[in-house]
Length: 617
Image (cartoon, one colour):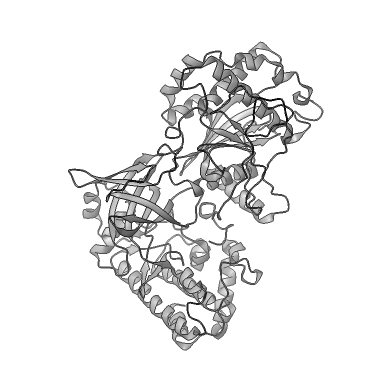
């Protein structure tokens, strides 16, 4: 996906890899690494550890800095007011459990707050003339590790026999990433499961900053936190929200990233005190932190227990012929078991609608399973497919089954959609090496035919009052010489569409916002958006979808011409442009009359495909 600077809610995440796993700490006095496994020895501590902040290296990477700025702006607009830890726990429906925990954990961490490690070691003392940390984040990280190890020991000693005795998570310092090109490096992570650490096993993220922020967090820091959250969303389809802990100066804050908003809660003061009153405050901080780190995954951030990787869904029809699903962590030899096989990569956004797509097996058939988050004030995607089927729109996937996984979580629902497998995306189809060796004209004729088929689908849907609104080369697929138009999750009804019966059948009221309006016209994939939408138009029509199709055709022609349009080739740099720059440059290319295909990097094309592009253009 291109144009990362275009829209905060349409930012892509590339495939992410994370650090190599460090060696677990032991109870000896030798030099130790920064990984703490609380599921085994809890009496160990980290001493004489050489710590260098993993830190997320943004120096001399202008693209990443710009990305963080845009993500930060989006996070800033969704960030709710600074609130108490208790308030946020109540919002997450953990208030009752937190109150019971406090009854059990009273004074457990008071001794730690009084101990010399917090305020007597010179390296951690406040230096008024130079700020609280002379050694920057490296000293702060070492301080956090040492305190956290003491918290583990205190809990093991005082909470023995309770469910708060140990944390099920492993603390790791991601100093080394498997992929050297990956610049998404939090300072610490709490991971579930065992084996190689990656964003697919991250439970809670930790970021450190030597500067203390009283109220307003700088936009670039928010962008960092949002980038980490987006990396977790990318790898974990069973997430409800992503927690990020920020240790800034002497304060510890919790950020909860949901699909629609961000909560910020004050965990407490983390150290640097000489008074008994401050010791109580610090003890409360440790108590709250330990509560977060002992909550099971199914209660804190996930749809299920993910300590064992979920392998699929058990499809359970009830007596009313409604379908329910049960997430399973082990393969079942059952005809009603939906097994995850190969993931189809889709762009992941920091907020808003989100989809995970898998090629799967169900009842002996190859199917596509789509797990998606969508606003509760809209009809589910399956209802749109029903409307398309009723209208007889060709080239639309057949829906096999559908179920809600979660009805409402902060304004978003999670749903499962099973559809027929409609082949490979058109961008992949024409970019496949050797598909048509030395036969460019044949490929152009085939592309022309697929373009006609998609145009027919769009027009038939438009006549029925349905607008797709997200035409891209990932949402047009090819199977057995037939083009399919998939992913109608962004589609909306036009004023002349009849939706009354549909909403009644699906059990939704008249307040469902499903018609195209000016509030969300800017959605989709920026590289394929029409010029008017890129420049801020607030209403869409079929002409905008056709212009998006025109851009898909140009990209396919570029692939046929052996110039992959989504590469980092500086001669084809659309993906690095802002909306206004993309729109202006595109208009300039189109004004070249007979040479516009050449200007778009498509070369000299045959008459068959040129007739098609001229008609759309």
